[in-house]
Image 1 (tube, one colour):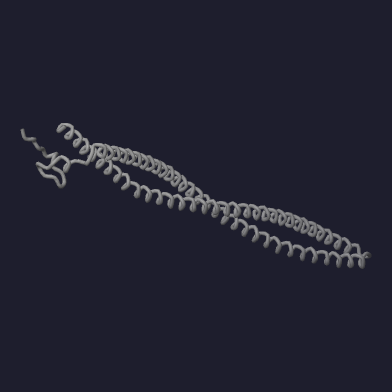
Image 2 (cartoon, one colour):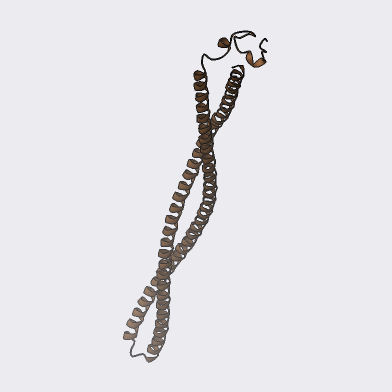
Length: 255
């Protein structure tokens, strides 16, 4: 009875009716070695694919964390920018108050100088009256009149001295306010510089996170084709294993 040939008997370089030695590997041991090697390669490919998938999942998690850090840094940047503008407005207001106080002190200085001139003039007049008073002691009416004038001038002198003293105190008070405002202005400027430094650090941090995120995205783009290639290689290994198993089954049936 002639042997029945199937399509599985036809392989590259074989024809129907060829001897078995021409259509199958030289020995069963070599075929088993090839099968074991294929299974081993298949396991390695699966393990590599799993490792790549795990690394990709880690990269995705890191990317999400960096996105959260980036969002948080952007919020901090907005807060620092807003605080910087507030400090700038406060500095402008303090400069305006300082200019106003300086103008007021200038006016007070002018008034004080004028008061001192008036006081000096009154003292000169009093001295002249005293001379006249001493020269007219025998004239009672003139003495009474001169004393009355002297009293009036002394009252004016006292009033002028009080005004000058009050003006002096007000100037001292204004100068103290200026010193306080200058100190406050220095503190605000220092705070503004610190805020600007923090803002620069946040901007640098955002740029670094953006660069790192781009690098991770490029790494992921490189690994994705590798993972897909590993999957295709696994499918090819399975097909080769199936063909080898089919060959073993056919050989056993013929034996």
